[in-house]
Length: 122
Image 1 (cartoon, one colour):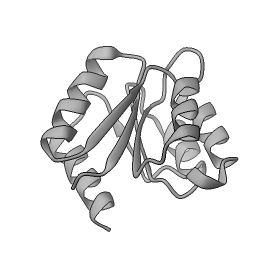
Image 2 (cartoon, one colour):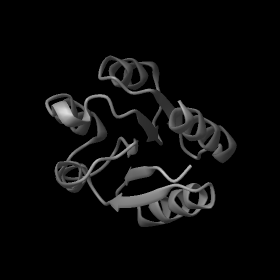
Image 3 (cartoon, one colour):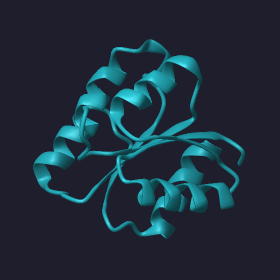
Image 4 (cartoon, one colour):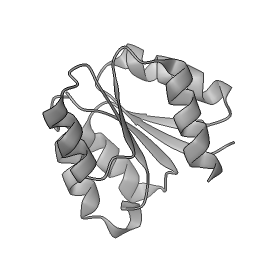
């Protein structure tokens, strides 16, 4: 697979776990501990997929998505949002902002791996 994946999550353990799982599947992962850092990384390098937490300090996942839409070079990068608080309002807003999928925490790693593989192989 060897595609570049950006993991944006304020929880270090979540980032490490996602990285281990995705690197096992052949992804090259880069981590950001908040949305502002994630946007900065996007300015300096291309990514094939973004895994994005919603509830973060500095910049929420929704704010990140709003700003991502303003960057032509990254508008087409698929985003999978992960969140500990999943309800209809969050799901609808995330979909309006262009996420490919939204997954509740704790993750079903099989589901997440399947989504990533599907996105990176298309």
